[in-house]
Structure formats: structure tokens, C-alpha cells
Image (cartoon, rainbow, N blue to C red; front, side):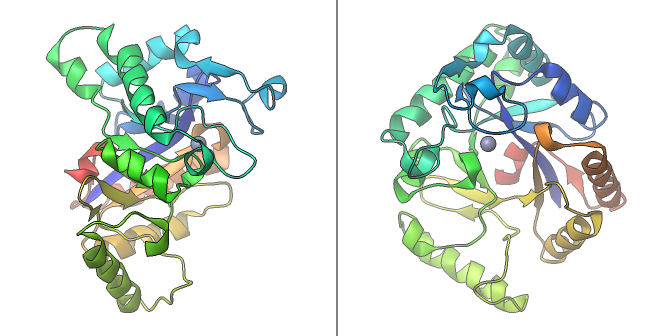
Length: 282
Ligand SMILES: [Zn+2]
């Protein structure tokens, strides 16, 4: 069984010390998949200065030199991998970025190129570093995607690490793999006694014609160790894998404690391998 961790919202507004504070005693056990925003535009959340909540200014990641240098070191040390987390992460009046932006295709292409150029090339030409800078995962801002947003990401060949759980055929482009995936999810629901409205995170990768998808379990304020271990045990009993998703900017001491106790629970199981999130799709 594979276990991975994803952390969202690394961007211009991130101070390296915030990542260090949360993960200094975690990333040597399990590499953190940092879902990063290339050109962050502010919105209302902790960690973004209030004056940038509504100013609409796009902040390129590289304007935070301390951060890009820090990320390169993490990548080279295999403590972190990088995923694409939208392009600006901005909220539109009628939806989140990958639901409402007029140009999701361009955002994926430009965002990928920017992150590779900014965090990959400049450090070293060595194979090791360039390989570890391969970006193969997209994390949708606010876990929300329109049909077109999903198609844009799939066409770019990126796998999707979401926390959206339901499998709504009406919300996605269809390909020849879709019906079988729909059936798998439905059978899993039945086997676990869930109805259509019950929360479900399917514990296996779903493969589509041009990409694959995997659902994460959220660690947010209020999440308990018991909830996570129960979800983990269910995934394990189903022969599946597990990915935990959180936001460094809301991890306080109680949440950190939940994270460590959960990892200890998982580590007691000799079948469990702590992996980079990219390996979930291997
Ligand atoms: Zn986000």
C-alpha cells in the first residue's frame, strides 16, 4: 500500500519558514507534493496580506527569491515534488479558476512551462535534478473543475490529484474508459454500504484515455486521527492506496499532532510504503 502527502497553495505569498515549520520532521519520512501556484492572485485567506485580497495583482513565484531557492533545495533533496495548482488561483464571480477562467488550456500550458523553468533548469543540468522536477500532477484550485477545465488538464497529460469525491458523469468529458470507471465506483459504493449521497473517496487510481485521477483525504481544522485511520484502514482493506491533502497555512499544533499520529499509525503497518504522490500513478 502506498501513502502520500499533498500540500496546497505554495505561491509568492509563502514564506519558506511556514513550510519548514509544518514539515521539518515529516519530509524525510515522506516527500511532500507541493501544489504550487505560478502567478498567484490574492483572495481572502489566512497568510495572504489583506491588501492583496482584492487588488487583482498577479505575483510571479520567482518574485519570492527566498522561496524559489528553498524549493529547489527541497526538490534536489527529494523532500518535495511540485504539482501545478492552477495558474493564478483566482476566484471569479461565477466560479473557481478551473471552472470559470476563459482560457484553461493556456493556463495549464503556461503554468507548466513557468514552474519547470523557474524551479528546474537553473539549479543544475544533472539528470537527477531535472528528473525530480518532472511535473506530472495537477491539483485543481478549491478542488473544483468544469468539464472544459478537466479536458484541458487531461489533454496536457497531467494526472489529477483531487479531493472531489463524487463521480458525476455529467460533469466530465467522456472517453472509452469512463463507463468502466463509473461501474467500479458504483460497485465500491455498494460493497461499502454507501448510497449515492454518502461521502466516498475511491481508493484506487482511475485511468482515463489521456490521464489518471486519484482522490485525497483532507486534513483540515477539526479532522480527527480516528477519522483518518478509519479511512486509511478502509483503503487498505480494499487493496487501495491513500493520499492525505492539507494546507500548510492552516496547520496549527493540534493539526500537526493529528498528522504525526496518523503517520505513526500507518508506519506500524509493514505493508505501507511512504511515497511521493507521483508514485500513486505508477
Ligand atoms: Zn488552493
